[in-house]
Length: 73
Image (cartoon, rainbow, N blue to C red; front, side, top):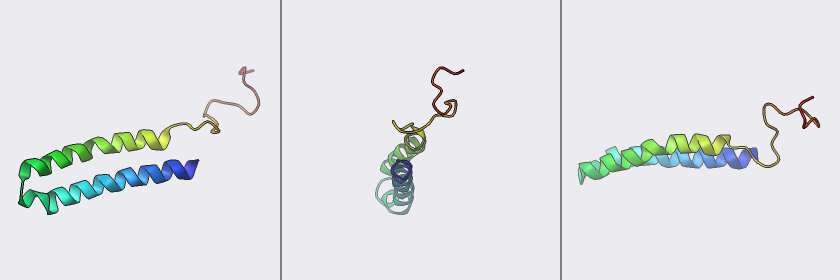
């Protein structure tokens, strides 16, 4: 489960970096507004990637849970 979340995070961040590099390395030669739009899209990806990487799976223990003690005694 951890590996799956980590893979998803790295895929999203790879897409983000690729958008930045392509926007200012290639696309700006033809269209600056398109390059700016690509950067705006890339700007939204990191917070979403952090949410994906930190979401709790069904088998994960949470930080405030105790082993076998569900009532908090």
